[in-house]
Length: 294
Ligand code: TA6
Image (tube, rainbow, N blue to C red; front, side):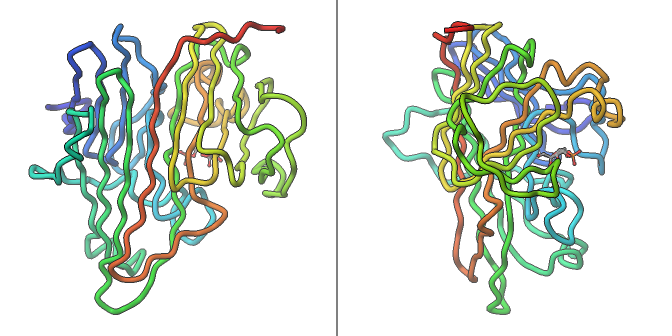
């Protein structure tokens, strides 16, 4: 199907009503809706669906470099390349409850090899479970024929939709070490309770548990992230000043989003030729039992 500006997208739908949309441009998930048709991801009203600009919101794929931690463009180039659809993907395990998925593939063009001199196959599987769970599985394989290994960092830069950031807290990262992007990436240890938001945040939490929860008190809903192969977790909200500085982001939209990004940043991933890395993120929602002040 055609999406915004004629860009191709794939729509996944489950019988109970949930759905997801993936653009071939960037292999970018731009929508994830629950059984009631409620949108769970944030996409800016100012998002520019026009290459080479990455799409502001949804789930950008950061590869082969997270942020500016290297010589490539920030967050790498996977998010602004056209991926191809695999029309004959490998099947899911026979016992899997998931029936709805799409596989997108990225291989380097000649131009890409000039920027990052490696050959690889990146297969992203986006799968929607019967209960509306959204699973992203990245498989990256070194296909270098020159015998050389390569090294990369990675993130699923997920933008969650929240009605009011001041009513949100994140659980699972308390007491962990983090690098603070607002303080020269210095290392600190998180103190105290679950994380809440009242100003700009841009932190890379290190060696995080496989499960992280985002509690949305306003919606009485909890997003549950389960991850595998992705030790780190970035938490980002630009707040008012940075929001104003971004052309493709509304001035007040910081109130309605939160990025919690399953990532592999601190320990770079190295693959020898023939080796494959897998990074998996499962997103689901549960009704929230959290009550403010208790
Ligand atoms: O993941 C957090 C971050 O690296 C922030 O530093 C912030 O700049 C954000 O990503 C967005 O980056 P982008 O290149 O999409 O504008």
